Length: 521
Image 1 (cartoon, helix red, strand yellow):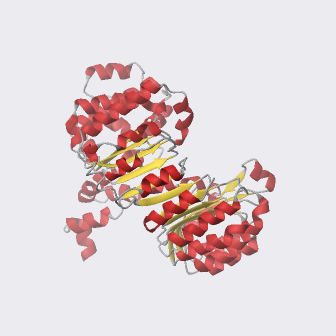
Image 2: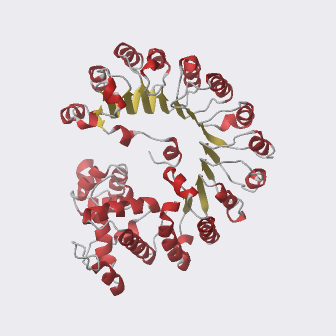
Image 3: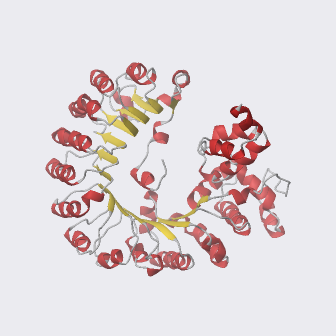
C-alpha cells in the first residue's frame, strides 16, 4: 500500500526523501524521471544542481543552456562565425535549468566546455572563452541561489578568470547571494607557467581577487598552490570572521615572517592543511608556536626531510588536531632514519588520523607503519605504497602479512600499491575478512595473478562496493607502463557486477589527499 502511494504521488515529502537519497546516483535519477510527473519534478533539480561535475561524455546540457537562453543577437552572430553543427536558437523547455544550479566550479566548467568543443571540432581558445563567458552571463541573469561557488584560478587560464571577474564585479548581487565562496589558486600543472609569467599578471590576478573578496561577506575556504605571493590574501580582515579552511599546497614559506599576524586575526578558522610545502623549518614553526590560539592543523603531507626538530615542535603543538597525515618519497631509500623519527613522532602525538597516505615505505619502518595504523581507530582512508621496485617484495610481504588483522571493521577507501606475492596476498585477504571496504584498489608492482584470490575472498563475500585492480603482465610491461586494468576486461567486469560490485578504472577511483580535503571523492 505504502509503495503504491509513493509511486502514485500521494506522499510527495516521503517520495522526495527517497529520491534525494540517490543524490549522486545519476543513472538512478535518470530512471526516476521516467516514472511519472511528480518523480520527474523531484529528480530534475537534483540532476541539474551541478551538471558540470557529472562524470560523462555527454555534454548536451551545455547546448541546452545556450539554446534556451541565448537571446542576444550579438552573441548569436559570434557563435554563427564558428558554424556550429548544432542550431543554437531558442526553444521551449519544461524547466528553467539554470535556476537549479547549487554548485559551480570554474575549472570544471572550462573542462566541460573544452571536451564539448573537441566534439564539435572547435577547440580554439577564442571559442572556448566565448562559451565560458556566455554561460556566466546566463547564470548571472538567472539570479542563481548557489550554495557553493568555487573560483579556481591558474596562470594558464588567467584570461578566463579575467573575463568572468569583470562580469561578477559588474553584477555584485550574484556574488553577494552565494552562501559559501571558495577560492583556489594554482594547480600542479601551473608550476612552469608560474615561472614564465610576469609579476604584473600575478598582481592583476591578486587585485581582481581582492575586489571579489571585498564584495562578498561569507568567504569560507581558500587554497593556495605554488604561489607565496598570494599569502598576502590571507591578511584580510574582510573574512576574519568567516574564513574556516585554508589549504596550502607546494607553497615555499621561506622569507614569510607574518604568519603569526595572519592566523591571529582569523577568528573562526577551523582547519589548516599543509601539503608538499617547502621550508617547514624552525623559522616557520616558531611563528606557529607564537600563536596565542590553537593552530588547528588538520592535514600534513611532507615530501622532503632535512631536519626533524621543526616537525617535532609542530606535531607537539597541533598533533591532537591532525586528521590527515602522510609522506611521499616514491623513489627513496634516502633518509630512513629521518623517516623513522617522523613516524615515531606521529605515533606519539597523532591518535585521530582519518586519512593516511604513505608512499615510499622501506623495510626499516614497516613496524612503525603498522603501529600507526593500529593506533588510529578513526582511520577511514588508507594509501600504502612501496613503489615499483621489485626489490621491495620483502617490505610488501611484511605489510600484507600483518595489515589484515589491524584494519578497522569498515573502511571507506583502501589503496595498496605494492610488490605483491600471491601467498602474502592470500594471508592479507583472509586476515581482513571481517572488514568491509567501500572503495578497494590494488596496484601490483610485480607480475602475479591475484585475481582468483580477489574473486574468492572479495567478490563472493561481497566485501566491497567499488573495485579497481591493475596487474602488469610481466616485469617488462611494468617498465613500459603496459599493465592490465581490470576495467578493460569486459567479462570480468560483468562477473563482478553479478555480485553488485562496480569495477572502475584505477586512476578514476583513487582519491588524492588534496581532493579529499576539498570533498572531491
